[in-house]
Length: 334
Image 1 (cartoon, rainbow, N blue to C red):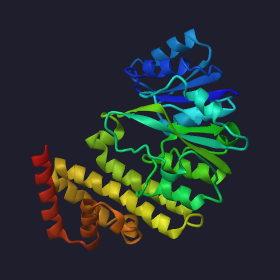
Image 2 (cartoon, rainbow, N blue to C red; image 1 turned 180 degrees about the vertical axis):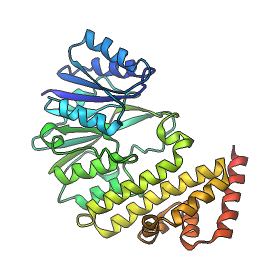
Image 3 (cartoon, rainbow, N blue to C red; image 1 turned 30 degrees about the horizontal axis):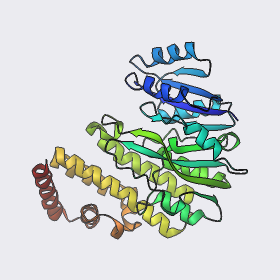
Image 4 (spheres, helix red, strand yellow; image 1 turned 90 degrees about the vertical axis):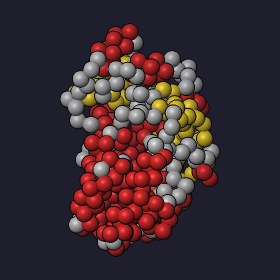
């Protein structure tokens, strides 16, 4: 069986060689490596081509910058393997990773979801909870699977690079190129809706490096991230409303609002007045107001729950005092 490994790369000159070395040194050699250079402005393309010149298992796709979802879709279209997996250009995989995944393939299993080693601090947990080391019929176990992957309680991160997917299944799926945030969550939902059987193995073979200069860490993107989360939530609500239990949807909404409130707090750390301005815009956003009224806010961490309830109830004076207090506390902590 051949495995297609898709690697989107944008300005990845510092980490791409490390990533490619880990892939090419796999004990399982029947692989093709598809590297998509997404309009990089550094030496990423040169690194890609130099590796491709040395190893004919590498295919290089060079295209204008159009985002990671477009890159992944291009990689899927170009893939010829029996199975497809993804790796981010700043990460690595253990030498036996692909062999271990192939050894765990069972007849009629449409995908394998495995696990990761965090390198450096990360907000992602690597606990598979009670899904660990189970092969499940997706339809018969849809409630427990959706609860684990869509809600904040016992949340399993929707990390694309932890999937090995059968080619005939992934050909039916597509990354939503209109989404700026959490496009991986929407892809997981497509996968669960399409696949019949999945296997969840608690084997940590992927090395995930926390990137402190990623989009989500850049303070200039905080506002864009907030509205990106709202866009993805809107898409998910439209897709899952007749498929997923209402309580799971309310928990998912609360989970997304919790992330939004945390970004508002991050904005407050930089400038409280800017934060108030963004909150005012959100209070006038009809979809945001809809979310506030259709979420289990009581399940959230206290600081996020308090802020969201103040926004919901338009308690401007208390909200100002609360944000001032938070900013002081963070300064003391720093």
